[in-house]
Image (cartoon, rainbow, N blue to C red):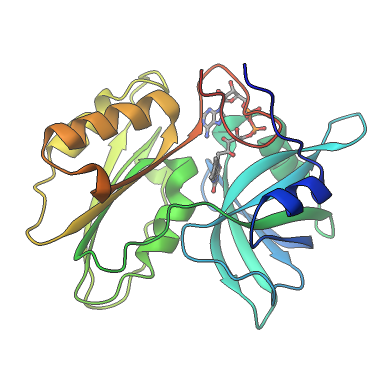
Length: 257
Ligand SMILES: Cc1cc2nc3c(=O)[nH]c(=O)nc-3n(C[C@H](O)[C@H](O)[C@H](O)COP(=O)(O)OP(=O)(O)OC[C@H]3O[C@@H](n4cnc5c(N)ncnc54)[C@H](O)[C@@H]3O)c2cc1C
């Protein structure tokens, strides 16, 4: 396996163009559903110029030890004036990142490096299709909220239960098609459910863009299916967020091979 780049703060700041390191403090916390934890964090956000779809690399503390490792979480919303941002964290990961989010108390401070991520809204597209699991919801909803009327937002999202999914409130004039796929015990790397949900979507006319986030094998299967249906590679922005059976690596990415 290729050696990972260092994940200490000075190395990341030197290696990643345009990012800043911030100390963020948890000021509110809520269970949005049995599956999603919402964290509201406060800090000096003036220098964090983030586009919808961008994420932050949190320095999650090593449990019972010293130091930290990186976990990436998409920005659900950000307000530089109030100095507040929100993250949505899928409990299903169950690893140290999800456990930190579940147990961290109000007042806890954590370092975040960002903005990160290349998947942002294609503002020239007429329709936007978001495909993934609950880990992708924060990025998907943040991008969808940036669509301007008369754009269309289509979602094909898989969750254990329909009730685990908060429904987005998009601006008047945005057409919304919400496809929620219940998992019914299928494996987390089984793309069957999302493939069926995608097959049920008739792509609107005009130019569209498709955004995919979630488990590595599922993301690859969705990408292949889209290409088979005539969507071009340029119309697809996909990002593996995690990989079944292996923890994400210390820099926050899933292991690719
Ligand atoms: C660019 C980017 C943006 C991301 N944005 C978000 C976000 O906004 N919200 C969010 O919740 N996650 C997001 N993720 C995914 C998140 O970083 C990973 O799921 C991360 O692995 C969770 O860390 P952990 O320490 O809890 O679990 P890990 O130690 O990485 O994994 C523990 C075990 O859980 C499994 N697993 C990991 N993630 C999931 C999952 N989501 N569902 C089910 N099983 C899982 C793994 O296969 C492993 O077996 C993002 C990832 C990337 C790369």
